[in-house]
Length: 120
Image (cartoon, rainbow, N blue to C red; front, side, top):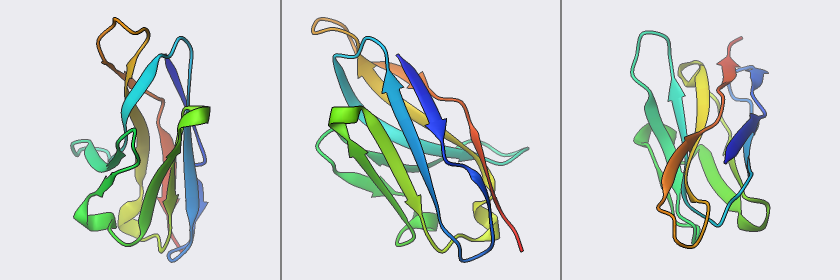
């Protein structure tokens, strides 16, 4: 299973960006999909996650500004980021728990990071 991330970039404070993470390969089922972020010198932070049924949970720091959603038919998770702040600057990573067949266990997969920079 491969996770391809796209959508990072640079934006001014108050701006918006949308991240996408598309899963491909031999996929039977994807359970939770998550977005993490990491700033140099700090631990990776869980930003938001969403269940296969669409139930979403957010870190307090992004509640009301970020929205995670997924398209199960496309095996893709998105994160709409609005009202961006300089402290949102980080490398963002996609993560998913997926099974490759009916009988296989869920395994964790990571996508490559994408830089999000919020600066005036």
